[in-house]
Image (cartoon, rainbow, N blue to C red; front, side, top):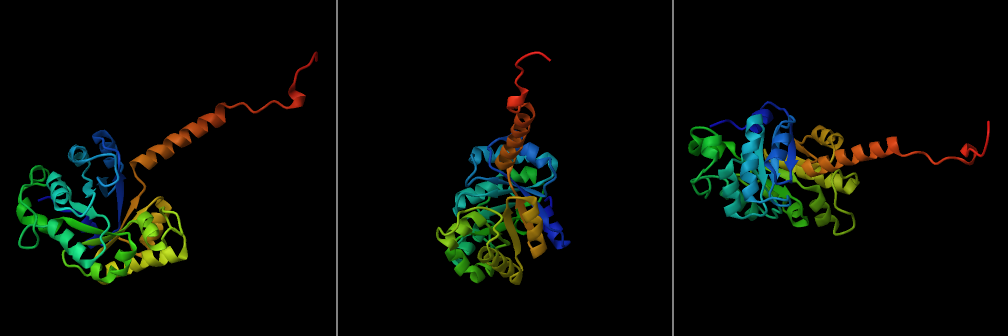
Length: 272
């Protein structure tokens, strides 16, 4: 089986950069995969796509060698196992609130005796190479998203869950969950109370030998998070990057082609 490059990077002490795909299109995924990310996550939870888009997006990403990940819609065994069968080398599960939920999710990720994953690696047996059934349990990554007040309250127990490989911080939902409407959701938090919680999640992951990942909006904040000790940061995503580049292009064009209003002195009323 082709080894998981993320695990290799972390074992060498190197942090990784994750990209994010919310547009259900194989060509978009292929473009994103060619940009140099270490991994690329297809967002089946909030992205404009479903499983019928997920599989061809993974196919389009394969040529680049980027590690394919998926965020599933929920802690449900069917979609977790189908994402793995489609070729995901890791799954990010949203809204994990307790050690029991974390353990249940982790069990979906691995074949017996280490879990309850059903055998049927339809595409991944070709995409990942020989011996997938024997080696997959050691190569796939199970990330639990910590993004609710309940999840933070149960943080240490979740982080200690066997079979869980990492904690993934979703700062937008985390802000909603712990601030209870006192702050608007969003990435790249600067509020001291939010930074304290984010760093508490980081510490819980490290104390339990888990990988720590953070969703970021900008490369500057992502680099800052790596400095704190995060192993993986997600930097923006396809839809936001497209909007930002298109917006900047339009703004620049308007600035160059819009004439400044003429002043009173510029009004030609006669001869020279």
